[in-house]
View 1 (cartoon, rainbow, N blue to C red):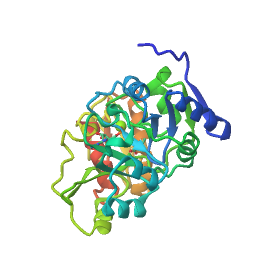
View 2: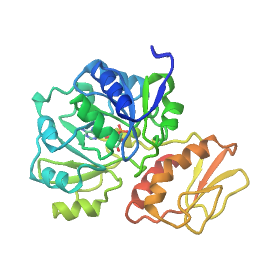
View 3: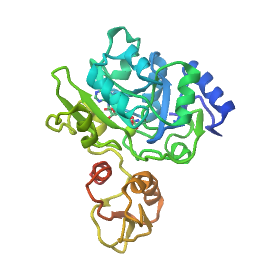
View 4: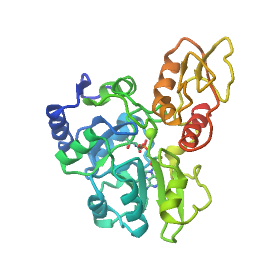
Length: 316
Ligand code: TXA
Ligand code: MG
């Protein structure tokens, strides 16, 4: 369905465009903007119509809750019950690529659609200077899922956002390519004292364990509680073959390390570089003339675990 915006404005993120973004957001409009992980599609989290516009623009099922972005721990404490485990993780990793699922404060004033009716809320304090400037300028908690059509490959550039969402978003702040390139690690802290990684990401389970001093509960990455983790997510729209050592004739090959290809995630075999390039590579493969995609094996260590999680979903 055509939206009320005739065209998407892409503006270089500077003081003037950040101020314009804050004005739009305060008025309940959507703005796409960079974070250190992927581009987000932001709306004020305290207003139902603004949040509804996110679901509409993404074509996102309304049972899939959104992450709320806050400028600091004090702002998080207005929205959720922050216990000493949450405080320790926030101190260790915020601002940064860690999302905490915590008990929602009933008086938080968050639109119910944000949490999709769950008694918990997902909170992240982002590190990207543009996202931080927008949070400061609005003074509002901002709901922001990845700025792509639901189920598609996440955007790591402003061009990816425009290609995926088009006129559904009036303003895209262009802050260049995202440094981490993979969505935040989501950790749920349970009242029982147990914890789980709901989505692997740039911060590894081992790093979380080291702060909490305990091992996680049984893995629930397929749980309906994090429906964003459904198997069909991150789909580039073509068959994807994993752990390929060479390309077949009709395949667009994405290499890694010693295994080359049409493009490479990292010829040096650097996993952080591979994560940063992953979604751009999938976008490029999707746009190529080849009907199929092949991807070289990625070691499962460190952030490689999160890369392989996304690749399995892209191939599903
Ligand atoms: O890096 C990121 O986290 C990016 C940037 C923009 O911040 N955001 C992002 O949002 O990846 P999104 O909407 O694409 O993914 C949100 C994930 C989904 O898997 C959703 O199910 C989960 O967070 N989630 C949100 N609230 C939750 C809750 N209360 N309990 C469990 N999972 C939750
Ligand atoms: Mg997403």
